[in-house]
Length: 147
Length: 414
Image 1 (tube, chains in turn blue, red):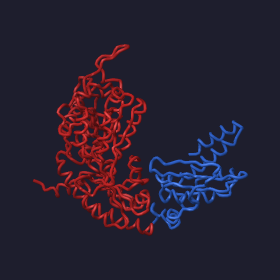
Image 2 (cartoon, one colour; image 1 turned 45 degrees about the vertical axis):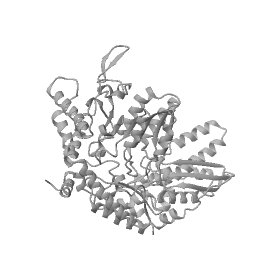
Image 3 (tube, helix red, strand yellow; image 1 turned 90 degrees about the vertical axis):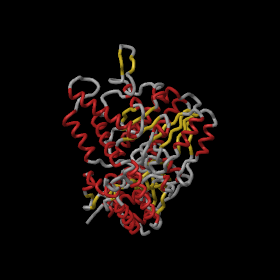
């Protein structure tokens, strides 16, 4: 029978031991940090952005197996995407990769912390490069409604 | 007379929640007592009885119900006085919990007495509730917050206190009597002795100690003492602040409103007598009654028996957990210096993952930073798993916990 402990399958455990895209990018174009006040999970994402594309992305920090696995998957699927594509990423893009679509509510924040950090980093970057203040406000509104 | 062993065997029958199963029909193994405890029928029934038979506002009306409600409310104040040995019932203030108690002191005492350049001292193993209120008041008053450090054994380094006291600028030293993460029992008498010699006031956070051991405030000789009802079989939302009368008399009110006043005019007000000056508005009467029932229950068992039972469990748990390969227990192994709280990490598995996997076996342990991020930084960990015991826990509960760790080891290929 299926239980909440079933989420700890091979892939999750492996990613938690050997996360991919783990580390820092020295000459990043944008970096962002956030943490989950409930459990202390803490994630930083650095990105290199060239010609509107995420050419490199790395994360570092501390977190549970769910958090580390999702951060690995998220950075992997973000790499090479345009800013628009990255902005359009949704929670199920990450969760479905790991079979976590039905993750219980108390753990969903562990799974989505890195997505939150990624979106914040993207908006920070786009915001910095925008001159049209109307768009900035629109973006802020969009960001505020994310979670 | 009932033997201690049979006394504790029967206790479980008083707790209806312990009869339920969780997840896949697993019996509940509740090991998160440092967070909150379960409630016996005696407490639950006392609250129901209050609402069914005696409910009215207190200290106001003259009719029969109001008199009964007031009596029930005030009876708990007397029970508290007996339970922790307080001579003057006027020094006992009902609050929502330890957090509110400490905030009350920070606000009503701190904002009057703390001046620029003063120092408040706390410790590295405090709960956030005994750190953040002091950050707020020291920042506002341009005062300083200093810490008594902790050694690798999880005990406070009292030399640090000597150094800070030597500045002559310390106004208050505040510390928990038992760490909510490590279970370390603080050498309160020594701290208070040093502070008294320096003319410095002391506040004790008793949230973890009062439910688990005999506490005697008269003997301790501190100036402020706070604890919570829900960690000692009582309901949530009710706690106690005790302040020595000579100090209480120098404090401004915390909340303004009904019941805390003597006379209100358009532009000035005079205050009610102690302790009512600090109990504004209609209080949490039903839960005060429930706390009274919890104190009755613990008194009947005897706090020395409670402590003995937990020493027995803690000794057993440390022995069993120490035998698990890759498991690290934090804090002292000297049982006489610790309560029934065991924080641990299991190899490189994150505490959240440990907690989730063993939850499937019906085990409730806490994982995370336990509202003690300063301590987590000191231990250089992001989080720990924590098992904490109470009167209804058994050695079998510990066996189930230890066995469940095998599943964690299997999943994470340890």
